[in-house]
Image: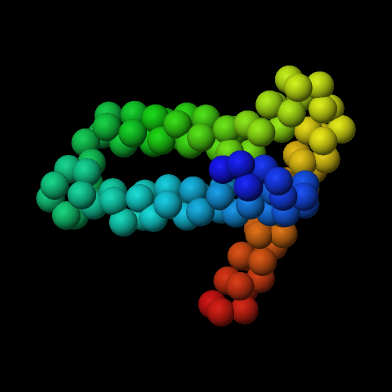
Length: 112
């Protein structure tokens, strides 16, 4: 982990955004492929009350994990009084996330 923190801010922002993209892919895969297994009947139906509960729990957990992935190290930098680095890293991370989002959109527009 220490060698990762020696990266320049743009590269560290890229790594943090990539970690978020991987996390999003894992959550989407779980939701897309895992829902049929929730009630065990392989038909994709879940009890009426379980669906909203599970979705809200996944949403809240996902928001917390995403906040740590995106803002965890910048928050640490801010606590160390390295305000400029914290803001620049946050900007790079959000910029890389936007680039990944546009690349994903372009990929699906071209190949669908």
